[in-house]
Picture (cartoon, rainbow over the protein chains, first blue to last red):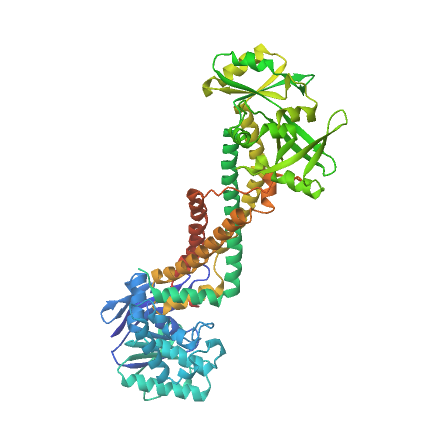
Length: 222
Length: 392
């Protein structure tokens, strides 16, 4: 279960550029739920995902994931938490352009104690699932937007996370690829993963796939 | 703990920034090469200097008239021998013979058959020479450089010395001398002392100078003082005076090396400064991505450590190996000339091999850890920021 308790996030606090991204937000997401987080650009959607993934810490309030106060985790524990529980699909994919498809997908597993063989098997499995195994040796900078997105999804799922966070996943995709993404969400929902998708793409609105919709505007939940 | 997968990632990362890293590797290797060469040559030449100075006579007495050196009376050696503490005195007949055609100076040394020579090495040569034969058919033993010059000027069997009165003194080449220290022996000609006198036009009761051996090194200064009092018209030089003079020359030339050293160190710290002053936006973003997908700060630093270690240790090994080859196999061409100078008869000087482990360790510890730290610090700074902040 993911819980936000009175979370406020202020960037550049006590400077001229101080920005309040979230104001006293509270909500919860049950395990296995698929949640749509919608709102216009700059409303605070990405900040909520960052806080769940412990990529940043709230200025006030608490973020609790499966009874763990992730907002209080020291940096190294936060990294371990992400490695074990979170699959993050970034808006701009955040792939390493000069690495190949398989190398990009394997990165989250490198610091773990898995054997090379086990890592290779896991990477192959996700590449097969997302039909990119034929591009295994290609550098990702040479892939199309849709292919890059599949690599990003494969990398997010290679460590078999409980929670999948997708930040504006269709922002750089055409309609067909966006529909493919919805298919992917259906698939992983069946696997019982908790999913939170932040978007302002209408293709997701009113979709029965989502159990819950959270709407956010200027840092406040509506 | 060593992580082979992170190590492989580091190698991959170095390859991805291949041109930049290759450039750093080349510059770094070059700097290590320059530093090591400077240290190796200095250590070797210092060793050579020490051995040369150790072989010098305790005291040399020469006669001075109007500020110039003149032949000294040989009977003075008998009187000096009477001074308590003096072990032996040896009048030397030696000098330089200028061979105009080749534009070189030969060092002509007269050897004695039945008396001690001033160097043990010369005694050894004297033992192997048939002096009767040398006198009957005037002959000489020459250094390798002398032989080379004479052969080049068609004197394959003999050489005609021109005596001060203009007459020729034909001397046959009996053999080529190859000493332990080619620095000293390359331009040398050994003859019977009588022939040497003829070539220099030196009288029977005169010598070039007198070498004094002192049993107790602590008494050298006192004996030198006594000789000065006994013969006010002489210049008395002790081994210590020569040592200071040699050291001054060495220190002066070391200054040129010091300049090279400073330039090398300065360039190294320029690289370090460049590294420490920050990462490129691409490198920062990569660290942010790694953190966002579950790498801990220590994983990132470990990976960066491997990268810096691979570059620095490779550069160190390349630099030191090249330097060893440059100094001890190729005899440090160009750089060696700073110390040995230039002359036609420059000996084929072999730099003595001195492997000073402490020097190598000093170079290692002043470069490799500094470079590694310079690479890790900016990565650590970025890795400790919130991943979200770095990716944005």
